[in-house]
Length: 303
Figure 1 (cartoon, rainbow, N blue to C red):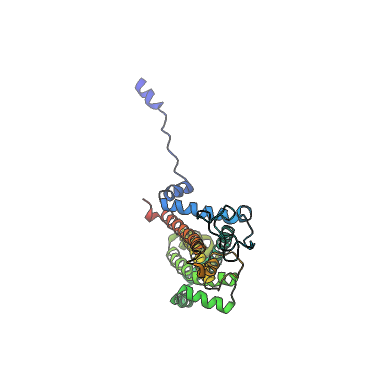
Figure 2: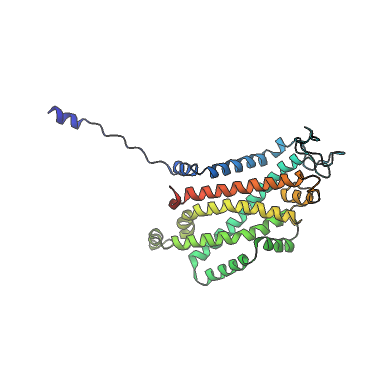
């Protein structure tokens, strides 16, 4: 009797609750060291962009008389007044790099917003409607993808005019085809699944099917593509600025700074090296972040 009574009084062992989706995502994301480094780089430059008016020592357009092409502080001629030296007209390079982060991050954000919105809508319509609508949209996308991205951006910005806003529009046009093809492929897979068929049998219309059922299940690849599109936007707008088709002087933009410093590549190499290094680090950071998001959000790539 005592053994039977003891067996009845045994308390059931507590079952560990399954991890939340956010905890699971963070666990797989931090396994990729490159992704963590990319996230740190993106957060750092985002904070620099947001705090530019506070941390920049000078106004980016302020000209210091008699302080032309001063060397950075680590050289023999450098001074603590200008930590990264000055450019050919006497403007502080550090301040212009800080404000350039503000311009570049804003440009990348605008490119992603415009291209993601238009590309996602076109991809949803093409993938769900099919038929001649799908064919018309995809042939238009094929035409855009047939041209090199920088050449297409140059054509668009030449037609619209040379300024930063038109450069954003031109680069967005080059990024849209990637979103359209990605979303269309995801929609074509999802619309044949059982939950979509069941929803249709209960009378759900196309708008509800697209935005309430299909789109939420396509968000993971869209987020990854948006992260990679951020780096493409920054790089292509900088390329247009280097060609003189982007931001106009005296706007502190990294591509424009590279263009202005071309003639000083031998006498003042830091004027070319520093903006180029900023572009390299930011683009690399977003690419590493995008790879980490892809690995963490795709179940097939989880270890």
